[in-house]
Length: 152
Image (cartoon, rainbow, N blue to C red; front, side):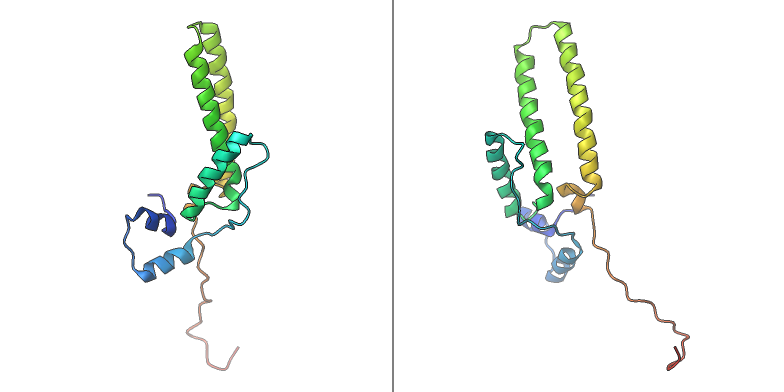
């Protein structure tokens, strides 16, 4: 089961935790800064508006960070491309040559997207991959129970 940030669980209202459980969860969550969330320059004006709308919603539930800007931008670009391809496919005559060309192009695009997404997940650059991370607790060094007091 995928681990969700405590703020997201609270926003959903689906999990009832004690104050100590909430504190423990908050301390074990990986936190990234969220003080510089801006739409990347490579987005078009309309895409930047959508970026800001979605980013504001994600910030509201405390799960968007500076690291997520490119991931959100890729989502918006992929969604726009999907909509464009839907329109193209709807307007095409059923000519196999054209369909095959579109199929080949989308396969290449899909491969590039999957490589980018895979690298982002490995680096903890997606919200879901960071939710799976847990900050390791510092363990106290084990004391030698056979050590004699006063000897080093």
